[in-house]
Every structure is written in structure tokens, then in C-alpha cells.
Image 1 (tube, helix red, strand yellow):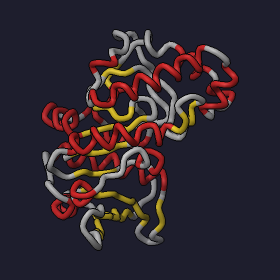
Image 2: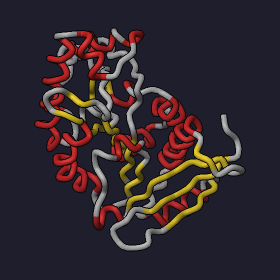
Image 3: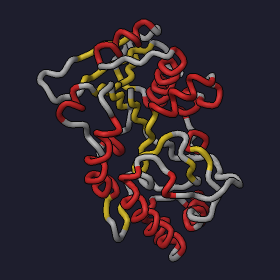
Image 4: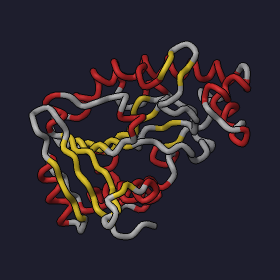
Length: 260
């Protein structure tokens, strides 16, 4: 099982660990594309602060993120699972999983990123600010920048099992499963049961809880149909829509009654 996650906009501080070693990151096939983004981002943020802030879409209160990006090559690095914070990651609670579940997380979770493309939660990275929606002056739109290398690397990373796609739309644009991989991919929406409306905050929290439940239980469904069964066994109310034809992903709706 491969679980595709969005990053968090806010991130924990880098700390005082050893600096980034780009060659040590998972999915080495993304290495050249990573170096291209890293080089331009560091150069941009080490130069005109106002231009960098505009390009990155940062408010005045986030001005300090520019200086942080300028030092990405020398800043301390920590496991990505410690860097990413926010609603989904709070609900996932990687640090409080038992040892076996942490091992499953290391194998299964892949976090998408405007800067890194995608990383495992055990990959050591510095704290940064660069969303997939950014358009760098040289490289252009990052979503488009990542499509070609992702198309080569991600099908191999997906292996032969289930792909559980929990990414937001901006990050989903960087890689869309196709063909046989799409047929074993499931996307998830979280709906407020009485209204059938998407609730954004609870959407993130529920997705985090779903991933935690799967990791903690040791459940490893091999396809979307088995995922539906597994989630129901774990207490979730799930409605599933099988694709109309081959080469399309499954759509799952998880219904919740409480919004908090």
C-alpha cells in the first residue's frame, strides 16, 4: 500500500541536526528536478526579499520564511514526519505510533511537495516554504515542472498494490495515476453525513485518522474494494463508487456526523 499525502503549509523548525543531503532522499529519480527547484528557490530568497515574498505568495507576517529558504542547504534537517505539522498530521500522530506501525509508515507514506516532489516520512529535510502552486521565474509552475519526472518515478514507487490518494488538488496535479495503476487507486472525500457537504478542517483530520487506523491495525488492503471492507471493519462509514471503466480511480466517500 502506498499512501499519497499533501504537505502542511506550516512546518516545524529545522532544529540543529545535520544539514540536508539531497542524495540521501528517497526516489532518487527525482534528484535532478529537486536540485533545479532548490537552486532557484535558494537564489531567489537570497536576493530580492520583496520579489521572493511575492513569488511565494507570502504575507507580511511570513517574511521570515524568505530568509529560512535562503539557508536551505545549510539549515538543520529532521525527518519529514517531524517537519510537517497541521491538522492532518496532528490526527495521524506519527510520533505516538508503536514501533511496527512506524515501520509501516516509513514504507507506505509519501508526502508530496513543491520543493522535493515527494519524500518518505523518514527522509531528512529542512523546514521550508514553497507550495506546489508557486510559479518560479525560471522554472515556471512547479506542478508542471514535476509532471515528467513523477510520471517516470511514481509508478515504480506504487509497486503492485493499493494506492490511497489523499492529496489536495494542487498536489494531485503533479502526478495522476494512469492505466493499471489508476485502477488500483482510491481517492477519498470526507462528507458531513446530514448535509453531504465537504468540511475542510474535518476532512483533513479524518484523513489523518484513517491513515493512523490503517497503520495501527496492520491492515494492508491490496486493492480499493478491500480498502472499503477494511475501513468499514475499522468503524468508518464508507460509500464507494467503482470506476465506470478500466484505467480510472475508485472514489470513496467517508461520512462523518460530527464536525470538530
